[in-house]
Each structure stands twice: as structure tokens, then as C-alpha cells.
Image 1: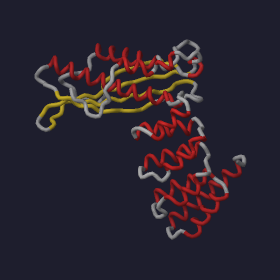
Image 2 (image 1 turned 60 degrees about the vertical axis):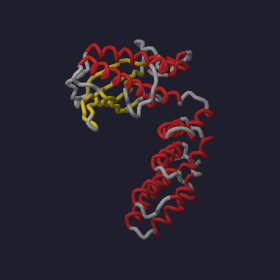
Image 3 (image 1 turned 180 degrees about the vertical axis):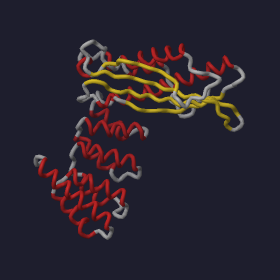
Length: 301
């Protein structure tokens, strides 16, 4: 069964990923609990050959709960923070290069209810797509293919979620390796966590990303630097972007105002007075106003 773009794994392998969570004695106090788990067909599902039967939904729900529970606290009556996990699947038959295939889109949404303080990163909203060739005239085989594809998509999303959660408990050394190595999506997640965990030791690495060719990498790094209140970013921001690009300049000016400092004030004043684009001059003036407001309400760094 061909499923382009999917990672190959087994459910046993996924359970191994969460083994590190299971042995933590303080898990009930440091993690929300898993409450409701639901599997359903998306509204856009067109699946006359292999509909998602109730029995299949129950099986997938049990599988998803077993995978996620090890990384989360046990739900007790006194639990203040509870997670709800919903996996939606849309399956339809498509004709690709003369061959009939089953295409499926799975989405995993995990939402937090109750006390949210410090637990926002447990939420998730992700999706993935897979395709597999199928003989639509053989209903039994088509159903097996559809079930395997659905299970693989759900497993892929669950593994990605657990991988992201693990970034919050790994050492700073391990997180640094994720920042500089691996696929882009993994690096982006590591950058966000570095900022949220307040790892100022990663500021030099994040500063280098500000001049990367990939816009997502630049913007994610900038967001982390803002969380770290890293004024070291100001001189790079004033030199590394195209000053005539209004969209880019708006991001830069806003970030510089939020970081603050004498260099930020000087740059914003310069742009507000001398830039040849009136729109950008106005953006700089607004950024100056925000900087002034921040200086009145924030303690001096």
C-alpha cells in the first residue's frame, strides 16, 4: 500500500515514544488529563466504498486513547485541566493517472478545558493526507485498505503530537540539536519551544535564523526572540530586511518597538522621519507610539 508523505511506524513504536512520560512521579501535577476521545467522519467525506463504520470508530478511539494516555495524567474527579481529543477522517475515491485510488485526510484536534495556566502547549490542531491504490470492485479489500490508511494517518498525527510534547521535557542540549538539525517542521517546533521555555542560551542560534532565506524560519525565530525579550535582535532587524517591502517592514517595526531600547528608538525615529514611503513612515510613527506606551508600563531592563 503506497502512502506518499507518511512516516512508517507501528503503534508499538509510538507507545515507546511516550515511555519517558510514564515514569514521572509528578505527572498528575504537571500535565492535564485526557478526558474525551472521539473519532468521526468529516462532513466532506465521500466514501461509498468504505464508510467509517461504528465498529471502526470505536477501535480507532481506543487506539488513540491508549497512545495519548501515557503522556498525560489520569483523569480524576479533582482534575482542573482536561484535554479533549478529536480525530476526523474524510475518505473518497479518486482517479489518478488512470488508476483508482483512495484518498484520505485526517485531522487531529486536541483542546484544553478548565484551568489553562501553563498548559496551552498541550493543544493541537494538525492534519495530514494519504493516498493508496485500491480495487473499488472488491469491497472487502477496499475496506481493509481504507482502515489501514486511516489508522496510519491517525498514528502519524499522534506521533507528531507526542514528539512535540517531548520538546518540553528534553534537556537544553537535546533541544538545541533539534533547532539546528532535521526537517523544517521539527526545527520550527523546537524554535517555538525554546522561546516558550525561556532558553536565553539559544539567542545566538535564533539570531542567525533572522537572515535565513525561509520566511517561516525567520518569523518563528523572531517570535521566539520576542518572548525572550532579546534586544540583540534589533541591529539585525534594522539591516537584514528589504526596507521597501511594506509587509515585511510592518513586522520589523512592530518587533523593534516591542523589544525596545535606545537603538530601537533611534531606528524607528529615523524611519518615521526619512523613509520615502508614506505608508512605512506612518507604520514607524505608530511603532514609536507603541514603544512609548511600553516604556511607560514596563520595568526597565
